[in-house]
View 1 (cartoon, rainbow, N blue to C red):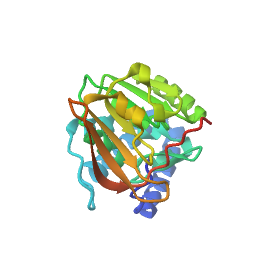
View 2 (cartoon, rainbow, N blue to C red; view 1 turned 30 degrees about the horizontal axis):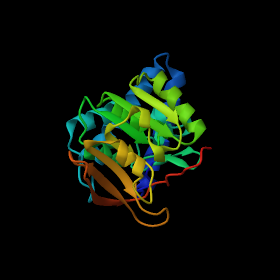
View 3 (cartoon, rainbow, N blue to C red; view 1 turned 90 degrees about the vertical axis):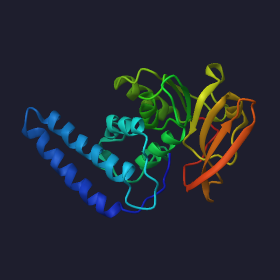
Length: 255
């Protein structure tokens, strides 16, 4: 759950306030208000994908994988945050979701998904469910997603939300993600959405030969790097640092 790239907030917050006012005006005034609200959010989602992800305005590398872009266009991000945050859901920054956790910046979600080079028959483990947004994006691209959350309330909320929105191939567990989900391993891909000081050995063990893991590595108050981990067919582990990021820490105690 990333908190990187927080720089154009003032301009977008002004747009968000206008959008929220617009939504609040159209909803009670028309019997078909729900359709109009959906249209507003659809437009914001398309704008997000085009201007933040496929054609970012700064030094960021664009996300080019059409399957990833399509998934980002389909998942209603505003339904993965609180109602009060809905108008800001498509901003170029993370948002708080309670319990000291965040929903990652859209660009980071798309980038990590692309870095994994996932295939339709893959089984993916996610550590750090949060609101369930990353899992929902992955669910459109792979066979099964197994996601672990250490905060009980967030795990329960995410499971309910994912079921309600019919992401039926996502399986949620409340547990210490450091240990992975051994009974469903090994996994083709692993994605960790919280920062670890080192790559957890149980996750390396649960990664299939030929598999890939994307994980932020670094201390809580120091520079973290989004790290690509690959396990060769012979079981050799290779790691490669990519961009600097800042994520909430991987915690170990259930709460």
